Amino acid sequence: MKIKIIALSFLMLVLPLGLISADGLVPCELGECNICHLFQLFTNIVTFVLTIIVPPIATIMFLYGGILFYTSGGVPEKVNKAKEVMVYTVFGLIIIYSAWVIVGAFLNAIGVASWTGLTTWWEIDCSI
Image (cartoon, rainbow, N blue to C red; front, side):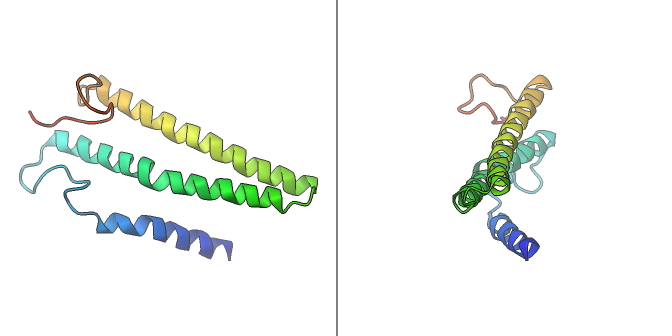
């Protein structure tokens, strides 16, 4: 039963990915793409996942942990389970967003992105 709920929730969150127009994630028109646009596409996908997909999942996990904590009735095992859910959610967010910074630093190091002169530090400029 839990697997079905998780799979349905995942589909509800990921299904809109297929509805995104080419202007959203794909940075170039067919025939105009170069290697820089591949990095820009990768960055667009990562940014979409981290700004659209991750926050609702984290919110759901915090709510789940809160509900477990509220309904634990003081039973130590249930209280510990609720605390674990919340702590693991925080650790997951730290790992996910740290990876975002590391990927940005990597793209900056190989010269695809620049952290100066752009409106946001994770953008890639393919105007060359």
